[in-house]
Length: 306
Image (cartoon, rainbow, N blue to C red; front, top):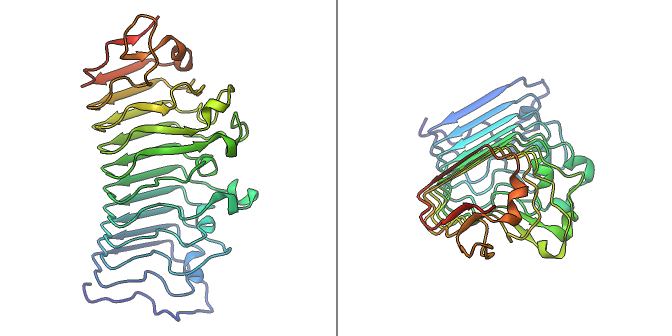
C-alpha cells in the first residue's frame, strides 16, 4: 500500500450509518490524513484505531471538534515519525469513552494533549474515561500530561513511560490552582512504571508546596512505583518537605539511578547521615510499603532512619 495517498477523499459524505468498529492502517508511507474533513460519520461507532509505520501523518484528526458522539475506546499509534498532534485543539470529545492510549516511536510529538484544562467545562472534565497511558520512544515529548492533570487521572489506573529522553517530570502540580488538599480531585492512578528516561528528575513536581501545611491526597491510590535506568532521577516528589500522601503504596523499585544521592532530598538526618532514603519525617507517609527494591544506589547510606 506504499502508493496509497488517502483512505477517504476529503469531501467524503454519506447519508447511511457507518458501522465501522475498528480501523488498522499499517505501512502506508504516503498517507497524510487519516480521515476526511468531516470524520464524524466514521467515528460514531469506531472503537479501536491503530496506525503503524505511516511516516507522512502529522495529525490523526485534521479538523476541529466542538462536540460529537465519538466512541473511540483505544488509540494505538506506532512508528509515525512526523506525527505532531494526536488530537485536535479540543480533545475532549475523544476522551469521553477513550480508555487506552499507546504512543510508540513518534519522534516529533512534544505533548499528548494540546489543551489547557482551565478552558474545559467542569462536566466535560468529569467525563474523561482514560484508564491506561503507555508512551515509548518519543524523544521530543516534553509534557507527558498537562499541569494539574487531575481531571485526566480520575479513572487512569496505569501510567507507563519508556525511553523518552526529554521528560524531566511526569506530573506537575500547582497547589495554588488545585487547592491545598486536592479533595474532590483524587485520581485512581495505581501503577507508575518508567524506564530509561534520561532527564527524569522526579515523578511529581509540586509548585508552591511550601505554602501549604495540609497533606496532598490526590494520589493516595498509588500502589506501585517502578523507576529503572533513569540516570538523573533524584526524588519521587519535590520539594521533599511536601506533606504528600502515598498511603496506599505497597511496592517501590528504584534501579540504576546514577545521580541519586538520596531519594527524598537534602534534609539532614538526625544520625548525621546525609544520604538517607527514608528520613524520620517521611516514614509515616509510606506506612503501607511492603516491598522495596534498590539496585545500583551506591550513594544511599541509610535506608530507614528510626
